[in-house]
Image (cartoon, rainbow, N blue to C red):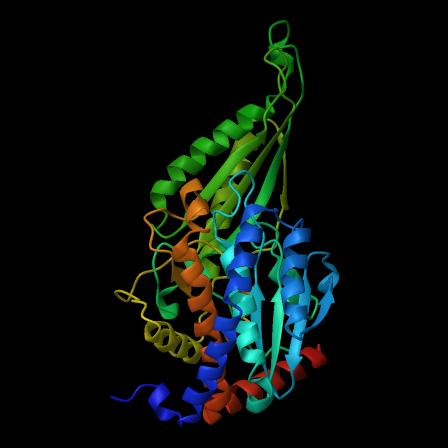
Length: 405
């Protein structure tokens, strides 16, 4: 059985060799970039230094950079080459509060830069345009969603990025959950907790009732759904009945319709807290809703062949990664991949152990391998006439729909 690569002519091998030479030449800069970002973690929408460090390397590589795209101070776009096919590469660089780069976004940023530099070296030959999009606030804030809504992805034909994980996963098996995040504010009536408790309406009681109801609800939902929450504000002192309580909550599911259903059931639990306690209830969205990830099959197969060609084992098929990403929203609009690249660790993301792994020799390997696999995938798409025509035609149709709105 012939592979996708074998259906291409020998030009791909020659072009990929030049890509590899470029990435190899940039290896020290890429790893320095990854380690520098890792050593100076910045949370959502505050990635001023990280964005600038990425911009510096891309500018030195001949990219034309526009900072602050989409009205986001820590976002940017960087473009090189020209043609009817624009390969978009997403660079994330935000960190988590308290535990730093425990999701390895330093690896994502450096791999994105490496892939871009590799493709830039052959962009004119392939007749492609390479666009790096610096996307802040993936962990919380939905930077890609805002950039998508504000037209920054309008000129992108296909989009890709790699994300570190404990082990490598085939893109077709690397799913993510849709997630909606919101805050619930209960308003009660304060009173002296000893002298006149009967005059108060306890907003914290409302939150307790809601949490008990949600705890019971968890038994009635499927195993791939998630409900997470914490009480952000619940009172000030013990001798005053709290008149305001704020609960931050998130609901996740792999299917958008399932997410909507679960959200309504969770809201009913919060409403029960208000009804039972006598407090009033207010709910507002705290972040844009992250859509489920949709991996493009052609891009996924090319990436899988390229990453295994670099000596990585994608393991057994059928495993899901879980979690959520604003790349899901991008993937619902244009052909995209968001594969997981392994750091060879037992630690899971969003832990201190994984934060240490994100600056390990295995993470350095992931930077280079991820850069090469993405760049090679861009080469394959550019040289695959049928796929290229299909992607370009779909992009033109999307552009017509956008203009028609």
